[in-house]
Image 1 (cartoon, rainbow, N blue to C red):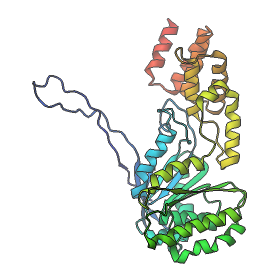
Image 2: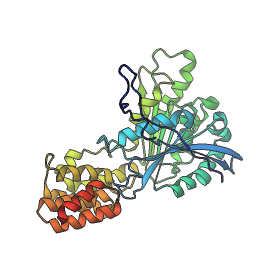
Image 3: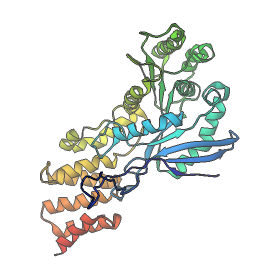
Image 4: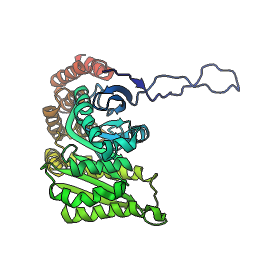
Length: 391
């Protein structure tokens, strides 16, 4: 296998020039480059050609403050146009830096599909799916820390193949976004076949399917087959969807085929991970609800995961910080629960030290800080705390 890896995004941090002449223009000084994603190329045996894919990791993935953790994977076709905005949106909706817990942090994989009418229709779609299952999934799941949860994101023909995969191969993915899908393909054959396919739906795993369509207002007549095919599938789902298939059809006003994806991604990701949305203020008041929350999530979405580090990060910060909501008893409860799932999370050992300081046990605080420093040796604040306690 041949891999090529490139840096996709760089950023400069502005700093003022020192001692510049009066009236001279300000000069920016590049401080560092920030890696957003990586691109890979490899030879796909099943497709008999080179294929390109992109990978974006959650911001906690390589952060030394956090311990190792597994993540769901979101696969998006039409990667050259979809990957960058989708990965940014996933990061925003799950980002611990901006205290936003709408969806779980996820690995995002964009797949280049340059021959769309081959890969994203039944013409070559079965071979493309075989490539995903036998070649790409094993690469991603061997290279990265993944949970057994996959989502499939597609727009237009990509939405068609997302729908086709759900109906013909349920269980390959857990969640599906079909954004204004081209269900008209082949005279809407997949819609004609959907009643029979829904009756024969043969997986017991929870499947979540989110379907969108543009509004019919101001739509040219030639789009009627496109729209009606989607609405007809919605009718079939209402009549025949099995209980383990959770679905939603949403019509977006004031959109067209090109503008609908962003709204669909945002609402669709919330639907796929319905029930994840974490009210950290509520959980801070009632931390005993953390574990039941994720049991319900597994039953509702098929995503079985331990409570993530990001929720313990914000709760332990609030409960051990003087100008937030300090509460030693709750802090110990939350931190020890977090350590049960994430024993190598440096920040949890650090916050355990802070909790011990709250109850005036400096020796135990020192031991916790030292453990945290072993896990994150470059943390200068930890070194200062250890020096203070030793003195």
